[in-house]
Image 1 (cartoon, rainbow, N blue to C red):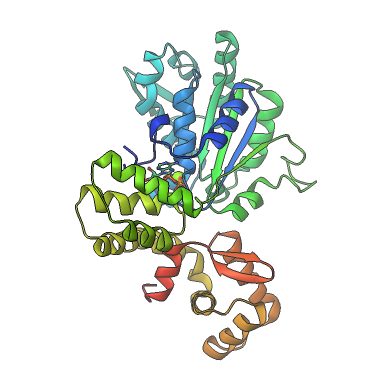
Image 2 (tube, rainbow, N blue to C red):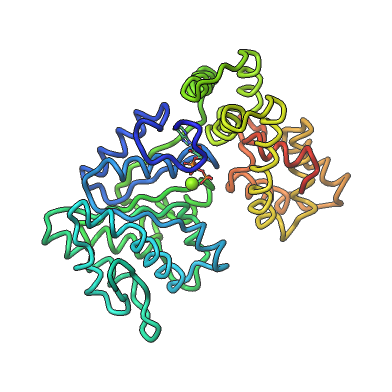
Length: 369
Ligand SMILES: Nc1ncnc2c1ncn2[C@@H]1O[C@H](COP(=O)(O)OP(=O)(O)OP(=O)(O)O)[C@@H](O)[C@H]1O
Ligand SMILES: [Mg+2]
């Protein structure tokens, strides 16, 4: 179902991503060690990876790194391993059904306990992530396959107590040839900062990697998506409403999907469906945005308000900040702007700053922050 609100898992439900899917499947089959899926919030990164992992005949695991941070407040060695154990518990039945006796690998990792189909951590001994990777690699070598580890929203691995995950991935690329890493990130700039592929002093510098960028849908594709979704749901929606939704939701497939779900399946009016999209998605986004802006809330908010109200140039925005939030040094102001770009709330083109997505724009304009 196209308007299913969860990330897509099957090929038929993944609209208009043939090229990106092809690229991802090819990279996996070629056993490329590092694959990076970039794209803004709600553009379909998790869906693309899930669909690909379901299509390849390889064992795999997808870890929701953002989920770890939100659940435990940090991404430590321990919370990561707990999440890995949980994810294995969830996927063991499917893996075993597909003929992958992955428990053979897990049993070799000290500190992991496997009982029936449940993987847990031993209370007294903490398993090591490196040891797990080694065990998976050796198992793959014996089985003649390779294992795909997808780290969804990998930029949150930066929030760790002391462990350098970029170093660990680099070490794995060099030493464990049967593992493939897929990392995704919605905060594109932060993911880049985390991976530091262009920094000669960083562990991943110069490593081969495949980049897959997910862009928002263009207008025509957005119209086709809604039209096809409505037709699948067996409802007929006036053209002017479809066009209005497309204009307001700006090609972000996650927003279009929400709208379609409310309109087609919850039988809401056009207006109400749109307001539901903004209300629900904005509530989710507010939480994330608040975390970023907390250290300098008044100024960050002033920047976002300035841009939302039509000021796009550095000097215009700075003028607004000074007038509403007080004086600020140029370098400090630039840093705040840069952070908003890095985290994907603003984009910069031709020396002008714009708010990237309709939900952020709504949040700022409706004074919900
Ligand atoms: N190509 C697609 N075709 C149909 N629906 C899609 C597609 N891509 C994403 N969706 C839908 O859009 C919503 C967001 O998708 P998904 O969670 O995969 O995006 P994301 O980029 O991982 O988002 P987030 O930033 O929240 O992690 C989901 O409801 C999903 O079902
Ligand atoms: Mg996602």
